[in-house]
Length: 259
Ligand SMILES: Nc1ncnc2c1ncn2[C@@H]1O[C@H](COP(=O)(O)OP(=O)(O)OP(=O)(O)O)[C@@H](O)[C@H]1O
Image (cartoon, rainbow, N blue to C red; front, side):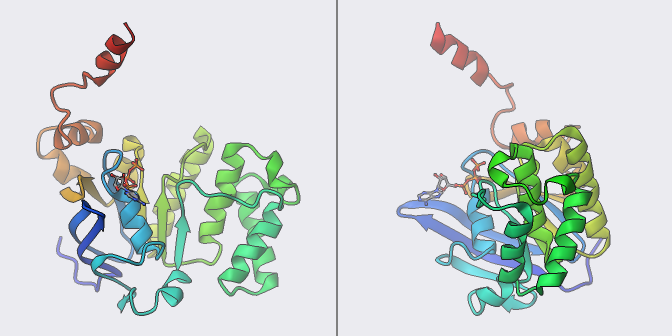
């Protein structure tokens, strides 16, 4: 179906080089309000580089990115405050308690102290760690920290949410909850850019799936559209388009290297 809305994110001929190496080779993409974009690709394909450009962590690149109709090169600071970002490997200030940490993050987003405290308490409870709100995070498990990170990415109620492998370390119940949350947020009109290696989840939550390989988009469509090529799971589509369709003999190669 043709989208008649204005894109909330528009990526035009995005290129990035590290020295001689071309990491992004001209990415073009329009993303509309309320869409969940699943961004997948093999290790080293260019996913995190794309995300770092979208979130202003990398400022040197060729091409243009528009968010909320503004070129991010013109005012990345104001755009950053309107994005929620959950990074892949974030350091959390774990000498702080969740409430202290979220207070710090909320203030960076310009929120009022009372509003931060109320929202943080509600979110921590919703994520099942309300009882740990005043406990130092150096005592937290990986999943508990990941929950705090997720909360820190949405506490300011942004319209664009960028998630880089957000389910890492979460237990099965939390995964179900976050999947549901992604769908509900999209229904509210939020736009989610979701990078992950968890094919089964991407398959279920995404309205549009983009597969990047060697810095180029090699598939772009709904899961139904991608399946029309004949493969019934995203795992199989991924394997075919990234050159592993002959069956993955890498595991056997690893084993034989040991013998
Ligand atoms: N700071 C850097 N300097 C040089 N090369 C880099 C740098 N950051 C990333 N690269 C290279 O850019 C390419 C893309 O990396 P990127 O982190 O975007 O991949 P990815 O798709 O996120 O991979 P993964 O699934 O492993 O997280 C890789 O070849 C990587 O080695």
